Length: 265
Figure (cartoon, one colour):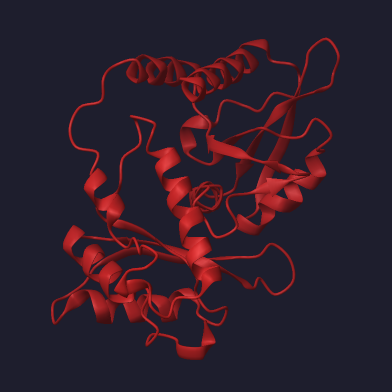
């Protein structure tokens, strides 16, 4: 599989950079969960521009583009450390291709961002990937929320909205071709939110629709926002529930529901 080969090559590159210690190599802080490894950078992208983009998620300790030891030219990857784990997690979430903007882009490149891992951990992960995955991947849940053209559920849905849904479905199934990817039973990505809806309002709404008279535990509810200016909503959010049944109830209640926000959407 080409994707698996590319991922293996990236991990080996990350490991090799740790070994070389090129003078500007980040310290051994990868175990703190605040350092991310960024791939698929343009060779022309500079640390300042990358740092400006990443600052939307939180304050940074450093950003370091990895250079070839012989030419001192960029190798197309970088390390960045945030001051908090929360900021690093925001960055990882926004980098997912199923986000409203289709991930994070800089200088015309779609960035691939993961938590940085130690050399030992990278070796362990590679060893795990060659094993056959066990247990359920919850693939049946991937069909939840799907609206097919020509069905009753699609009545009144605009062509633009249907096209957007089709794009997200295609991205989802591309990712699920990887046998190591599974569908979360408790986590949702909510698209097409009105710009005026913030995390507090969305959480309040989800508590109402997911509980059905019972107590609801939402572990996380975060509307993603722009880097510059007033931090305007990007129109999508990540939500994690404490229980699968509550996540499912919320999905079925808010998906394609014109009564929620009316003309605001």
